[in-house]
Length: 457
Image (cartoon, rainbow, N blue to C red; front, side):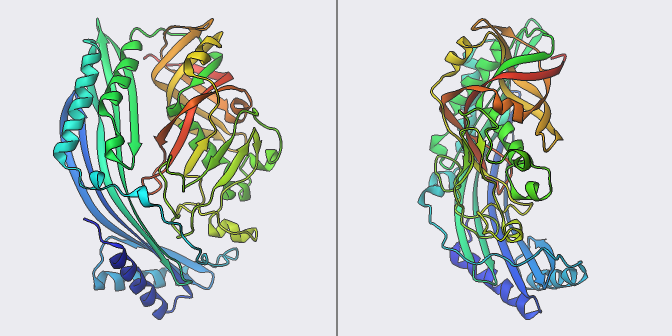
């Protein structure tokens, strides 16, 4: 059940009035009402079906240059008064932030009509169970070697309302359907692993059979993986792996906070030919090919930002705080944890994965990355592991699956060595920004990528 636009705005305005009466200089209220439902499965059986309805109120109180942030999931009058009181008390004891200028001013927020899908919003546990059954059945039908299928299927509706004392009044609702699965196959005691996932605003766009088949194929083809020596290889990164690389690139370099903190590669490479001229990246929260959403958590409308143009780093994204520090306007990328690109797109190329394989002399096909961490922000050095399907390529042919490897590599070097980009793209869920971030990514071939260790599986 949704709260509705009028109810959300009325509640937010009521809280703003209360906190201003209590002495706040400025104030901002964000209300996130979430209906989420999840069907989990393991060992090829559904074992859990859960649902949650929650309303979270986040109040930002400003007293001059003292700022507090408090939250509650109660919406009754007494709880609101207590929230306001806590916000004022905490703001009074904060140190002044001399760099704070103001909350953002209102701007027109575009309406995006296709964010809310009735079929997704009204999806029943039975429907999710039937779709999970299709996924599991298709995975087992692919091969008798498929041993077990696990994963989760979720549907949700989210309403986001942002009101501030300067006149911002933003509201939108959206639905999300998402599925992910891991398939384990077995042959004579040896196991193989495969992964697949999909995300959409519309449940009818999710094809569970396709996802089950995709994961099963990877799993079976990864049986009898062999160990290989670590070292420098050509790599073909599938969209799942590309999405992880882009997410860490965004966190470490493509936001104004990283620049202002002195840890972004933009300080060294902005407007220079740093990467392959095939590589163009932008962020656009209004493009329905991604998981679009019209405004950020401050109620500022999303703006298209060109981040990397033909290998040249161009721009970073801003929230109101980082923008005011430079005398600029927010680009609509506030997340509550600093500005971040949340709806990234990579320009497609003219290749295919098959063509990439044929162009590879000595390399690896990588499904996705796991347990990734930042080693050096400014140099964008990441470390992590391959997972759920990695194969050795020799002289244009896939030779055999390999056991997972650990990589330690600078993505700056990797992006400079992009040689091919696929023409087909895939929408992949990314991050936890209101549960609706995404990257629209193609597969990418990189000619030099350093692997530093191997695993036992």
